[in-house]
Amino acid sequence: MNKIIAANWKMNKNSKEAAETIKELSAFLNNSLPPKREVIIFPSFISLEASTHALSSSVLQFGAQDVYPAKDGAFTGEISPSMILDAGAAWVLTGHSERRHIIKEENTLVGQKTSFALASGLNVIACVGETLEEREAGKLYDVLTTQLNQTLAKLPTPLSPERLVIAYEPVWAIGTGKTAQTEDIIEAHAIIRELLKDIIGTSVSQTRILYGGSVKPENAREILELDNVEGLLVGGASLKAESFAKIIQA
Ligand code: PEP
Image (tube, rainbow, N blue to C red; front, top):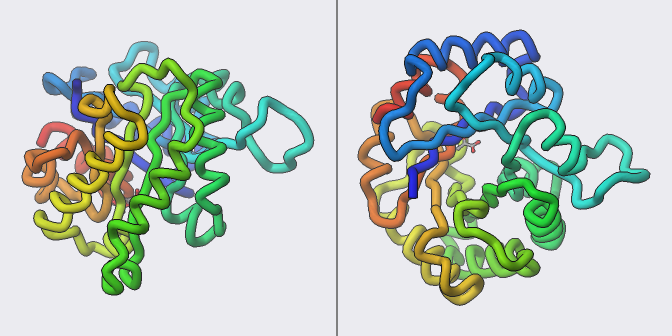
């Protein structure tokens, strides 16, 4: 399967800025991707539609940074899967560490979001990862086990393997400039691959696992070549079209 290079723009860029960055990115890429690459951009909800409409034809895919697990109804401030699809996006992030730790989203809700989004036709990148405290207390395996078990508790079946992607994002490496060491990435991705075998079984060899945490043009290639790394989720370094284009082409 293709490696995925995903851009999480977080709470950055209004509609105009988002559309401009997409046009610039497309120009840097000559509107074509290197072989075996897929690129997904996650703008804010409010600039999602401007992003998906920025170019008349494009090799880029789009997603939302969050979703609410209901079709419609009295959920003030929330956004449904069909609204995301209607904006022209096909993907959603669930369980990003900033939602888990700042917004205090629990594993159960992350699981509900993941299964409802998939059942509604969105593809999902579900994020997992440990805090520095958890790592130092030797809890990496336990944290990944709990997060994955609950995130993937009620997957719709059948589910084609390219529709669900896991992103390993150690919380201490996100937005801090501290990239995880290669051995840390290899260890965590191997644990995730094993856990996926137990949780989702046969199609697991095709489930892509992305690494995220202070990825930049200088380290992207080395990380992409590690075992069980099938792509990258990039925050800060995806905001500038030129640096994100370099990561895509790494
Ligand atoms: C992220 O937000 O998913 C992320 C990995 O951020 P950064 O690349 O800035 O560490």
